[in-house]
Image (cartoon, rainbow, N blue to C red):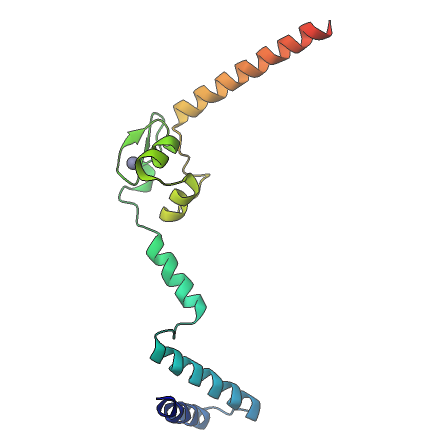
Length: 146
Ligand SMILES: [Zn+2]
């Protein structure tokens, strides 16, 4: 079957060479390239790595089932896996779907900055709590130093 491929390679290269001027070096490169491509095609590994990578990615990135401007709201965020509305998706993704946040973002091709896993109200609340805690700690520190 390799000879068959060689024949094909010769045909392709000849027809290409007749259309474009190739230096001997280019010709050799072309022969190699065409031969490898044909051999690859035959064994099912024809696609250049790049194309395979792209194909993989296209397969992995799912089209979100919900319009993206609907999934992050003040009072809830929507899980793209099951459509549930939650205040925070972090624990839910792990428990219900066994998906880490990073994987979730990758799966849907989302930007973590634009699509937080926590609704605004909840993150504001957390921030307020953290601030209060921080102030409390400072107060203790001051007491100690005096
Ligand atoms: Zn879910």
